[in-house]
Length: 343
Image (cartoon, rainbow, N blue to C red; front, side, top):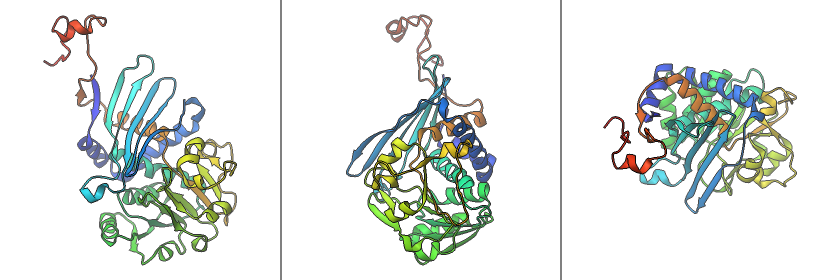
């Protein structure tokens, strides 16, 4: 039997811990796995693109555990009452190939994306950063705000979205959570004076949400909306003048902001900073960019975290349990141990 965590249990786990405590715990798992980056078998995710979106399979493993996530990205889905992103994930035992855990990852992906953003900012943003600008207030916004508060000490959040309803939703959800939250009138209004700027827009387009005239010395830009070919948020001149950090360079060259740049454009993988191999920010006026597209290692960390936190619980009858492992056909006909031990 395989441990199963559905959406209701995931919400209950986060509720039991509290969102901020959960995000801090998750950031710890991420930090530990980034520090042992070289222990993982890594590959860019497999993407099936269509005019309406993308479906992706994201695998990664170390010597003991294999993980993958199935995830989509369809910006038009909310128009028909569906989520832009929906996902599930699996942990499996490398020694036997048997699945150990099947988990929802729609909620968990939002949490791990926010925790990764905050972890990156802990290395790349100016010390003492207290103000966050959030450009794009869809499904990711509240998770981002709470992660930056919990991990980085952010106190004030400025929201902006072209959808006033989405902006009002985010503000209402963040009320009473210890943040000063305001709705800006424009991107420029939100970004002005902010220490950290997160862009989290959904449109699949070569957008220029941020342009060089908006950027101030010392800001840290957390670009999480550009995550597939043909989808970007930053003007190229911002990238040219900033120090750019990525998760897994071969994947980000295809999907991230740096898809706009030549193949030899210099970037630094975040794990090197987390592991202490290379510096992150090198000065108070330096502009840093975390060009984040999401990488399978982050899902591995998130699945490990919820497995350890959840403990025993509901299980799926996913793999036959047989008296004779060579007699699958006989077991199907009712000879030997039943396929469903609970039957």
